[in-house]
Length: 487
Image (tube, rainbow, N blue to C red; front, side, top):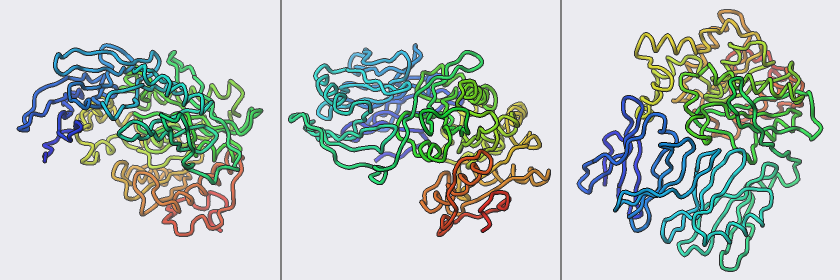
C-alpha cells in the first residue's frame, strides 16, 4: 500500500490512509510532510530541534477536517491544539503550566478529544468537552486517591475500560457503563499482591545545584524510616521519565529494607521542552550532577545514611551508574549497571538500523563520533576514560543479544578493570537483549542484585536457592565476590 523511503514515522486517518510522514533533518530538526494520494509529499510543518520531543501529530478527526497535535512551539510545556485543515487556523484545547499534555480521552464517534491529561508529580486532567464533566467527576469520585487511564471504549461510547493506578496496589481494570453510571471490577493485573504489604510512593521535588527543580519519587520501607540504606533507581532513555504508580522495583527494594529514590533528572520528558533541552551536551555533566544532588538531598533530609547509598540503572541509567562510579567514586557504596554504555563513541558508531533516522538528533544533543572534536567530547564523557577511579563494588549485567547497547560496552569496562586488578562482578545472559524477557532470567538477576545490595548496604536478601534454575545466567567475572553465588 505504501513503501517507506526512509521516513521515521507516519500518521494515518480513520480510513487507514497515510496522511503525514516525519523526517529528521541533518541538523536534528524534524519536518512533517503531507502525503498526497499519488505518494508525493509537501511540507506541512517544521519542528525546530528544541521542539522535536514535545511536538507531534496525534490524530485526525473522523471527518478528516481536523488534526490534533501535541505542540510546544512558541511555548514551554506542550499543549493540545486543533488545526482546522480547511482554514489553517489553530485552536488551543488544553494546556498545563507545569507539565506537557501527554494524552487524551477520545470520543470514537467523532475522534475528538473529550479531556486531556498531563503529569507533573501526579496526574492532572483538563476538561475539553463539557459533556464529559459528569463522566470525569463520577470516575474520580469512585477511585479516590488513585489515578485512571482510558484503555478502550466501544464505538457507541457506552462502555469504557479504564485502568486504575495506585502506588501501593496492583493495577485494576474496570468497566465503566456511561448510561448506568456503574464501575465494575474486571480483574487485577497482580492478584497475588492482595495480601502483600506494599508501600506508598511519595511525589517530591529536589533542587539541583543550579536552581532547576527535579521531580522525583520516594518510597520508604515504613513511615518512620530515617537515616537508613537507600537505593537510587534511575530510568533509562534518557528521554523518558519516572511516573507515580505501582513500581515493582520500588516495592521489592522497600520490602528488603531500603528507601528507594527515582529522579527525573534534566532531559527527562513530560515537564516542558526547557527541561528536556537543559540536557543538551550535558551527558555526564549536569545530568549527572542532578543525581549527585538528589543523593545529597536524601542525606540532608535524614532519609539516607551517606555511607549506605546504592545506585542502580539500566540502559542510559546504566551509563549514569558507571558515570557515578567514575566521576563521584566515593559517593555511592555500590553500583549496579544493567546493559549500560561505557564508551559513547562506540555506542553511537553501533547505532542499530532502526535508530538511524534519529541519529541526527543524537549528534545534536551529544556530539558526532565522525569528527575529531566530537570524538574528544564523547570520550571525555565516557566512563571508560576514568575506569581507574572506580573504588566501590560494581555489578555489571549484560544481555548478549542486545543490539542497542552491545555487549562490547560492558566488555570494555570489565576488561579495563581486569587489567587494573579492580574487582568487578560481571554476569551475562545469552538469550536476552536490551532488557529481560524471560522470567527465569529476571528472577536470577534479582537474586544476584539483592545479595549484592545486602552485602554492601545491609538490607535483607533471600538465599539464592533455585533462582538460577532454567536461567542462562553466566558469571564471567567476580562470582566469588558476592556471598551465596558459589554454593
